[in-house]
Length: 228
Ligand code: MN
Image (spheres, rainbow, N blue to C red):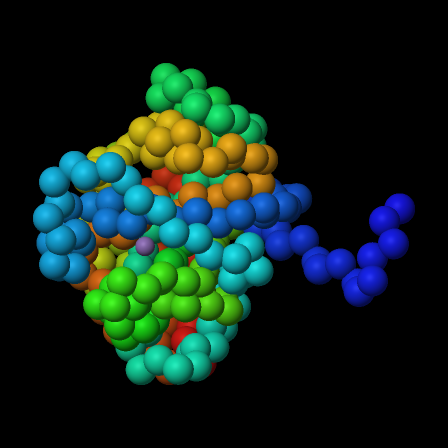
């Protein structure tokens, strides 16, 4: 046994619908993966190669837990997304084989300090503090692909205080799940335990303390948090 000089950190994990938990290694996120969202962020949604940023594994917020409004921001935005959980790793995974590497799916929120992200963009600085802050990744229960298959179409929706804020269809992703896995596995070796937030559709907006966020992905499940 390794002689750790401090206590090793706890393993982040996402509860699985029906029991058990999925241990998380890394959290990758795809940027601008729906054309209407790319446009609202001032980008050209032409099929430029996908790009990625990351959140720490311990940024995951369990389903139904309250999300503390983060420090140093006055512009906390919601981004409703489908999350892919990698069960089998690999490098240079072929698109045709990509779905064999997927263990399951969840509904998730890529919460964003938009003011910090915008400032970073303007200055050509990293997005990390706009994206990868504490509790920035609420996630619902993980559902095994062995039960639900591999959703490539269907409603993705977010309600805030009961009103629909974001609504779109998974089929509108610019880069599909197999394409994303193929591309990302060319950049890094994917490993069991990796999560991929697959990008948000349009109508991202600010939330306030007290707001209740309820997201759903058809055929996958839901995610819920209250901002406190
Ligand atoms: Mn996002």
